[in-house]
Length: 254
Ligand SMILES: Nc1ncnc2c1ncn2[C@@H]1O[C@H](COP(=O)(O)OP(=O)(O)OP(=O)(O)O)[C@@H](O)[C@H]1O
Ligand SMILES: [Mg+2]
Image 1 (cartoon, helix red, strand yellow):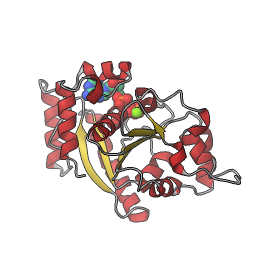
Image 2 (cartoon, rainbow, N blue to C red):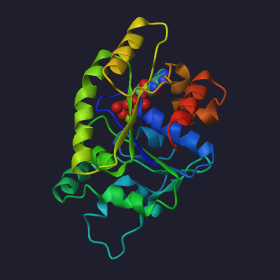
Image 3 (cartoon, protein in one colour):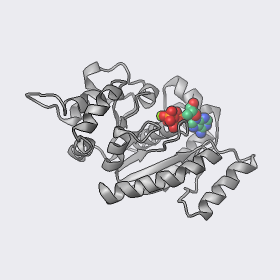
């Protein structure tokens, strides 16, 4: 199962959730891969995977599709083990930005899908972290994925962005990936004591958006786990935030 975390809005929890779901998946014994498609490389940093060989990251994988090689490296050779058992990563790179226009003009939009198809026997679950933009790479991810998870931070701007996001996903389904489903909207950084977040979520549900039943609350533990470079299932397995992430993970279809 290939899942992409996507929202054009920044700072809603795409990287935090991608890494934590991937780590929970690995912890449950699934062979899991995370792919960092954002030039900010936040999920790579979170998993402390920056120090791996420079020629083995996501930019190198894309670059070999536009340069002449006697031997193209298979996708599996870009997957690096992490400190978490069963969890590998294709690490992010700032160089993706330099490659974007050439990849786009040479119609390489299906290359990620092909790479993931070649990995289907190696991994049970794949999580893709994307940038806060509908660029070449997030489009590639939406074309390659089976499911899209959309985190929101429960404010009004997030709601305003959802309509155009849903339209875009409908377009991608129509043009490129008939199987792409919105698995759900994740209410992240939810503040149970304030009135507005619940009101916004109720309105979304009334409008027919598939908001997932388990909300993820705002907790400083998330930031502490980033700083420690350890996903929550490893850093604070019994914490309330971790338990809610595990519950949400279990609610997803596997
Ligand atoms: N549940 C949470 N509780 C507290 N802080 C959180 C929570 N989720 C995310 N954050 C914090 O919010 C910030 C943004 O989160 P994150 O980087 O995961 O979002 P993003 O959508 O990947 O951002 P970008 O669009 O820039 O890639 C981070 O500082 C992160 O620590
Ligand atoms: Mg991010």
